Length: 414
Image 1 (cartoon, rainbow, N blue to C red):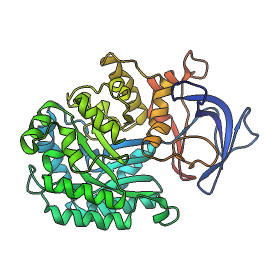
Image 2: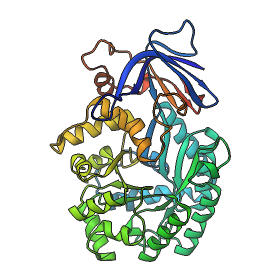
Image 3: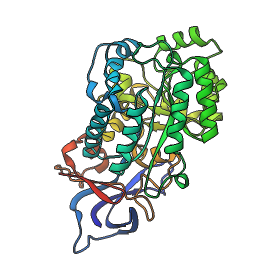
Image 4: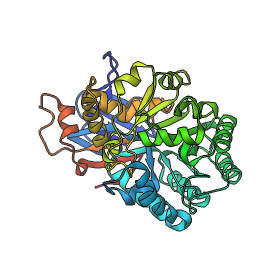
């Protein structure tokens, strides 16, 4: 397949990571980008053309598959929102057929806004999580999905026996391992050890989750320091010097750990996260929607913490990672920090997120990278703007997504 237009390429000359624009074309074969050419457009091509922006596929590092149907439940704090909205919706995944049908719908939505890879939470239901993993693999996405671990402080419909859910997670890890060499060729899906957060997990469950992740060198995803009442509840339930130390003593901090939110952290907590090379997933739209607070990205980055970006649907209300990246700029300005440019923000939603996840061959347009791409056709005069990428980002319209290519195949087309 030949795709032509204005290519969004890695900017290797900039002091800060970002992207640059160059007219040209690329060719894909066998799920990979095999050629990249800057210059004029070819005489014939399969996708794109003059006026089209060709971007790497977008990567979402923190979201909840069963929460796409509850976007917009406004006016509640985090803990009330979980009890009144989230848990009742997630209970529906007790029906595996419902979970499969919903995952199909979610993937359709993701592809329509250019998301080709994600890290996401399923629910406490084992069979539902299996169906979600199967669906992602069949649809060709690169994805990490975890069965949620909960054994306390939740409705009866969400509570599970700690030993049983750890055993079920290990079954998933055996079937959906983290490392490509352990998976069948072409399969880009793996599972994650997924303690929801310290409030809903006993100390024993957290420790067992840490041991299991270490045994399998697995991804870990959880939530950390999203709002102040959460910190107070964790201190009451677990003690310890701080929230992050609860995870650290359970063995849950590692280079494969994604910590959602990370708003309220002490100096010691930032040090722990940096020393363990854990990743802080910024979720700006969810933080503003639930009135949780604002992450200070500059403070975390200055402490040596790797940052990623996530939609956190359904606390987050934007499915498009371009809109989430725009919200990241606005949140940084609100925190009175040095705001990332449009170039840096686009990099974060693509190659930056890939790098945070340890995916060096994803999220970029270069030879031998995975052929996950978005063909965008803006209906504004963006190419002659003072800041073309800034115009596209701040004027973004999801209807501009003309086609989404996943693993070298057109997975969505208008």
